[in-house]
Amino acid sequence: MPLSSYRDFDAALAYAAGAVERTMDRLIPKAESGEARVFEAMRYSSLGGGKRLRAFFVLASATLFKVGALPAMRTASAIEFIHAYSLIHDDLPAMDDDDLRRGKPSCHKQFDEATAILAGDALQALAFEVLAHGDTHGDPGVRTLLVAELAKAAGAQGMVGGQMLDLLAETQGPDMSIGAITRLQRLKTGALISFSCTAGAILGKAAEPLRLALSAYAHDLGLAFQIVDDLLDVEGTAEELGKTPGKDIAAGKATFVSILGLERARAQARLLADQAAAHLEPFGPSAHLLKQAAEFVVSRRA
Amino acid sequence: MPLSSYRDFDAALAYAAGAVERTMDRLIPKAESGEARVFEAMRYSSLGGGKRLRAFFVLASATLFKVGALPAMRTASAIEFIHAYSLIHDDLPAMDDDDLRRGKPSCHKQFDEATAILAGDALQALAFEVLAHGDTHGDPGVRTLLVAELAKAAGAQGMVGGQMLDLLAETQGPDMSIGAITRLQRLKTGALISFSCTAGAILGKAAEPLRLALSAYAHDLGLAFQIVDDLLDVEGTAEELGKTPGKDIAAGKATFVSILGLERARAQARLLADQAAAHLEPFGPSAHLLKQAAEFVVSRRA
Image (cartoon, rainbow over all chains, first blue to last red; front, top):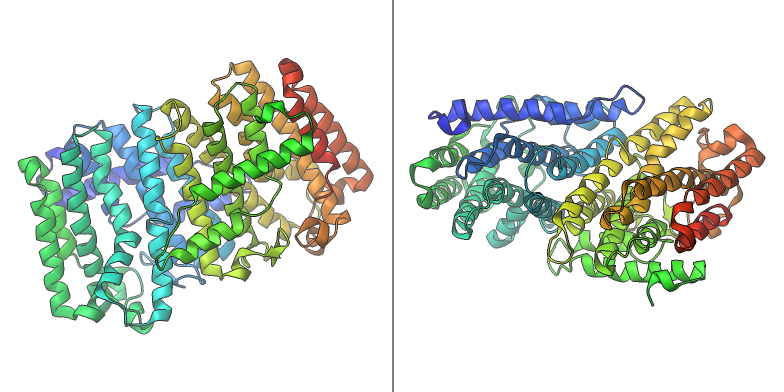
């Protein structure tokens, strides 16, 4: 049954994750020859796990505008390929140096550093190939707009810029202002979440006010998401998270929690999630999945 | 004066390199804030040098189909951003571990490894943003096709796949077959060169036989280019090359020269360049720049 028919959020999320995973599996080329190793690493790090929240945002926003299943699913796969690439490169020894990801050895531990660099590079290229490729989905004007928006969200004015700030923040220590850390996170995680939530509007050629409503939703939700990430880094266990907790404290890095404290950070996340949900007003009851997603983001344990 | 008016190849190459450099400079965003470091690294590694041969192939092939200057220049910039990103990542310690590039410290020596990884990632995203962005150039159908073709050429089925093979070849030692090394190089350097030479045909919506003629030209020229690279690695100096020579021999890697010997490698490069030029027949005298480019590729000293 289509995503829009689901009432229960957990079932909808599980359905979306399964469907996007199957699509991604089909979209990663099979190789028999020597370079098969890079395809294996791409599969290892992009398939078999994750909540697929970004894919869910694409698919759920697409239901608001009666977007076809195929273009929505390709766009959802593209954003998950970008997300997977960013995690591979983030985990590298020169970056966050993390050995554990989604409960498994991170890509460079399972393969090696060179393969991990290449697998990340190839996943980024694959994301744009999947978005642009013309055989299977619709209007080329929509597709170029998606490519341009995703490239901007993923690049130095978006995610990569945020990662750069994040690395510099480590040397800066815990004395960051709340404004500076908010900007960092808006770039690092917010830009891709914004793309995900507005992709449905681009695909559906939605009227400007509706696209802006989704953009405002994404803006608040992305920040709530990051604050909860910081909370989980303090409160979660490696088993729950599938990655090493306590890394930010160990690195002496400023986080929303280190600046606001646990109580105020929790309250702030709740406030932002409620604010996010309020932006969905123009869509009425049809936005019930995105509304529940806001609740999920603040109540999740991983 | 437009590129097509140049008779002298060296002047044409210098003109194209200057023009694409100015365009690239404009296309890399300026940043004042913390993440400025990643923009600096992007500029450091993508501006100020290089023959810009790939850009030249785009611009020269575009003259055959009366493509507008702006879309040709943006496409030329995109391919050079991809090329620059690939060199940054290639030079990383986990990859080729090279301290010198274009006569300067390589990106991770000048900045640091993390910044180099991020600068490469951001340059790849920028390439696709530049190709896809709709404000300035034409038909979105053409733009999606360019994005899809470049993404394929740059990804695991193209350049990145070739880099994976190249890394594996190091452990394999000098006993590679000529077939295996040809396939490796067709992926590693050939795929991007093919994109460059056929981009003009895509931009100009050329008839299929003309696009295929350029593709055949690129096929032979790409291989000639790589054989000459292997020759220069043996015969060139660090001063001429702006990078460390003799690395392949030191690593015990198979190259066209180690398999064929100097004499036969030289003869093979010459044969391929002549063959490449012959594919330009259907264009008559208007392809004089591409014809001279084939000559340049085998006679260059760096």
